[in-house]
Image (cartoon, rainbow, N blue to C red; front, side, top):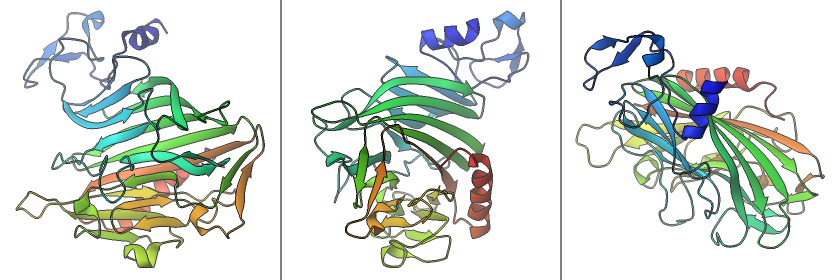
Length: 343
């Protein structure tokens, strides 16, 4: 417990639990026997040598950002600065090329932020786009959970706060980044939302969880958008049911034809309307598992005060053209892992 408290207070933690009785030299070429267990440094500290595993850091303050690195190169960053519209992940880098799979801003809709979570038309307010000085999803508590040499857990608590008045929703977020191998990693997201007042979500195409891919992964940029049913492109996937959706393409600026991509897994929820497993898709590179776009014109999703909604999603970042069997296996694994953790 004292060690855990020390890590949090230092604002610096890492994923190197499991180095055994070894510490590493600057080149990481030869292990050096440590003098005693107290001399081990599985948690990166200022002045430590480069790491050849996953590391995680909260930098500046407890309400700023979490940086995740793999072999000392940036893998992703969870950005939760106080004045943002909402917290989001950027970049989401591919392991092979080092290029981001996702875009932070870009035409035609530059308010999209890489990997993001929010919603428009919540009690008539907008927690999705533009005007960060108005309605916002405000990070109130950010910390690291369990970290290993191949994974890192991020814990975040947020308040959905309108421009005027009290917060309408509180959410607790748990993210787990796990490196599978040198070409593949996952980002699992568990989100628990509690209504602080009666909350109504109206028909909209803006929400909940989604990604905005880099242009070279999008259909408009020469990439492929396909779902678990084999349907491709916006025209054939919009508002269609599917277990997963993926986008991939040849990376720009390379002459080796390297293909990289990203997929979202959405397990079935027992609670309507999330039991529909329908998708919002755009050929320019935005896709998300959300049912609000397929609502009838007068249909709504209502959370009475005190109601709790639990959601779970997996992102898979991969190299090469993915086999459907691989993505099916990822979906099966996550569906089992998230059982009981979503509504």
